[in-house]
Each structure stands twice: as structure tokens, then as C-alpha cells.
Image 1: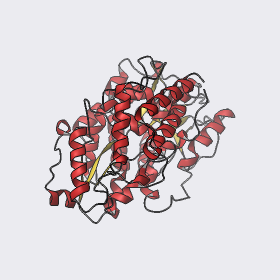
Image 2 (image 1 turned 90 degrees about the vertical axis):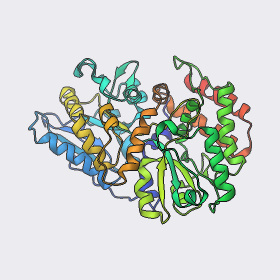
Image 3 (image 1 turned 135 degrees about the horizontal axis):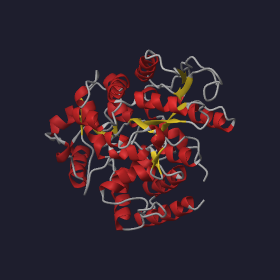
Image 4 (image 1 turned 120 degrees about the horizontal axis):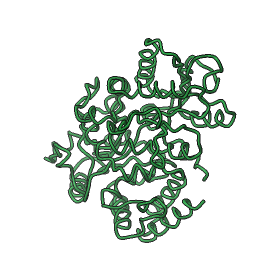
Length: 438
């Protein structure tokens, strides 16, 4: 099955840090290695292809590689930094030439495609029994294809609700103080309506799903309502039903009732963090990686509360995994580095350096000592435990890119052109069926 090229760009979640403030910087540190695939024959080195969208992210990678190489391993690691929007193109070109790096970092939503195409190796023989039990279930599921691990989870991002504390204080609105108290759909709509009618902001909120490849971020809402996109064995769509129709109707109502800016539909290029920071919206449902942008750009007070919920909790699955490519001449050594990189100590340090969320259960339970906005970041850490395991399975199927294209087109039609929820659910269902059968 062919992968959607547009979906391949969804991994650049953290580019918002720069795009939101202007233009994405064009120059990136290329690291110390060239394009010798799989560690050049006899070199004794492991090549690691990744990107660094922020200085903290680069610091995190350089730090873990330095710590590993100080152990004097049999095969030291050599970093290859490439611009974020070139990672998949370069990886696939080198895979086609049989010269892929030993190790590559990819978005979780790309794992199923690379695993199904044989680009990543099965790591089972390098992992002790029960190894995956240390990770949060959804993220361990995300690196498994047909019950086989083809990568290791490294970190994640997720969504919660940012809100303008000045506006909320003036209106006397109290926010949930725990995950268990998070707003239900009905409660959230009551708050949004009050903010819209009584507050100074033009719109109540905005939701981060903009772009041609980010519509998968709608899926947590479907799961919150008790639904799923695919059936149990992932062989057919499961959205053309009352739950699916009601979820489309719920999100369509945001636009119909003018609670969100019309410019924030699926296919728009609007940067909602800018709308929140300049006071156009009183809230935004967005990811933890936007905290630095808000800190730098928002004059009003702000804080974060938990993601909304309905019959169950669910939030966005972001972040990236690491895998060993089929071209590695020393997969055992490469797997050894992967395990070193995701052990508790190194995962903790990387997440602190880069502002990410850990995917080890022990770290998620205890929280991390973040340097910036630690209280808010640890709410996101807590929220990340609500990512549904079934949703992770659906988002990592090989044809996920094609499914996302269907969601993009049909949700845009519902939000912008008035397509009914019933017709939208039918069209999503038929489009997914076609994508699965390609």
C-alpha cells in the first residue's frame, strides 16, 4: 500500500515553535556524518539519522550519544542531523539505495508503514522477555506491528487545554484541578459559550488540527465519545454509526456556533498559538511543545488544564520512536544503543533537555523536573497516560497516510461547506474502506 506523502510531514510538530514566531529556520546542524549507509563497512560506527527542531532537542541527542560513546562501546554512535522536512525523503532515498543509516527516528504514525515494508528490523531477539511492560501501553503498542516490536518508544507529546487566566478570573470560571475532574463535553461547551458571550476574546477557543496531514488529531474526540475509526481487527471502518455521526456533529457545532475562528478548519494554515497569545481566543486545545511559544509571546496570564473528555478520556498521540534499519551491518549493537537511549535515566534527561513527555510508566508516574513551566508540563505528562491503546493501533497501520487524507477531506467539508454529519460519516467510511483495500 502506498503511503501518503502529505502525512509524512505530520512529524514536524515542534516546528510550531519557530513557524509560530515567523519562518522556520532554514539551516540545521548536519552533524558529523555523511551518507554512509548502515555504518560504512569496517568503520565500526553506527550512524543515527534524526532532526533537531530546537536547541534543547539537539542538546538531548548530543548528550545521550556522548554518554553512550564514553562507555567505549564496540560500535560508537555518530549523529546525522538533517532538516526536519527532509528526514523521510532522505531515509527513503537511502533505503532504496541500500545505504540507510543504522538507526532512524520516525513519527509513531509512520511505524506501521516502515515495518510492513521491511525497512526496520524485528527487535524481538535483542529484548528480554517483558521488556515492553515498562512503557505506557499505547506507546509500546505504537512501535509494534503484527505483535512484533520494530522500534522502541522514545518520547511523546499530547494535548490539553490552554486558557487565558485573566479572562477566566474576570468571568469567575473555575478550571479542573485534576485529571478526574476534567471537563466533559457538555461542561466544556458551557464554558466556551460563556467565554464567547461574556468575555473580551472574539472566539472561545481553537483546536490544533490544521494542515494537510494533522486530521488524525480529531481521533481522540471520537474515542472520547466511545467510538473507534476501525473495527477490532483493523480490516474495516467503524465510524458510520451514531457515535461517529455524533462526534462529527459535536466538532461541526464549534464552527456553526462560531465558538472557533472559521480560519482554523482542517485545511487552513492558521497558527492557533498566535490567536491564543494575542487574545483572539480565550482557550486553545494544543500540545505541550507550544509552551515555549506562549511563554515568549503572551502578555496576558495563562495556564493549562486537562484535555476535555466524554464517556472516556483520550488525548493526542504525538512523539517519535527509534528503529534499526535493514541496512545496518551491526543490528545487535544498534539495538544496544536504542535500549541505552530509552532507559529511565537517559529518557528522563532527554525529555528535560528537549521539553518532551516520557513514555516509561515509572517516569510518567513521578513526573520530571522540567526547567520551563514544570507544573504545566507535568499536567501534560499525566494527560499522556490517557492515549487509548486502540487508537495507537489504528494510527500506526501501514495505510494510515491514506486514511488521514480521507479524514482531512471529509472533516473539512463538514466544517467549511456544511456537509451533514451523516454524509461525512458515510464518506469517511467509504474512503477508509477504499484505503484499506488498496
